Length: 239
Image 1 (cartoon, rainbow, N blue to C red):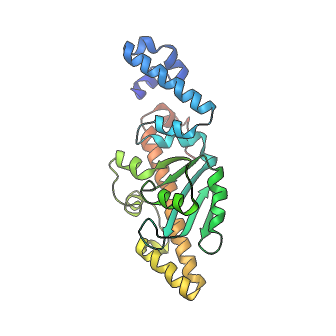
Image 2 (image 1 turned 120 degrees about the horizontal axis):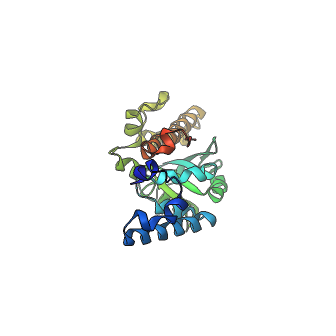
Image 3 (image 1 turned 90 degrees about the vertical axis):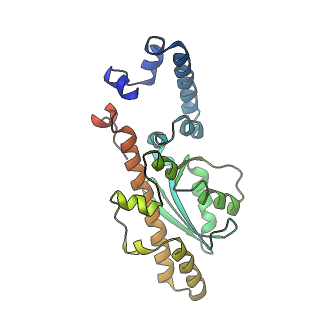
């Protein structure tokens, strides 16, 4: 339907809303106009969570275009797999800048980024990253959240982040053989030895996952837009 409207010259919400009664059935026209009203109000009030959730799964990445500079791509490592396992490292990429926060050094500074971001992007963050962040920092609310595991599954991309990103051509660094269990061991070895190389390897592994998130986001946005005039004509550039 979106591509059909584009081919007929309807590129903007206001164009569709103005002629909805002639484009759709009465019931559908009412639904479309009401949806646009909600989206426009949410946008004007910067209600990013409402904007994200107004889009269907697989296409929520589109919401990042207006909030990309305030979006935080993040990944955590923990000292164990349970919900109560402490966070050992959080890496965040925001507006082109990568920052890592480490237990016992600067982990509490993560809250400064958390307070300022409009959207967070994770992979399996609904079940893993976000509950642990909320518990660690005693948070009752979170920013708008896009979990790329759900978005990828819409296009048939299933499995872990490493499997999906690798299949799409993401170039991992030398620590690509590491996994979550290795990250746990690395921090425990570092905690007992204070060998900075071990910590450096852990941070590098964690940052690689964040870079893979951005890579996957760009792929999913391309998949979402690939048949639309915005992408095929080059009107919209992917950040």
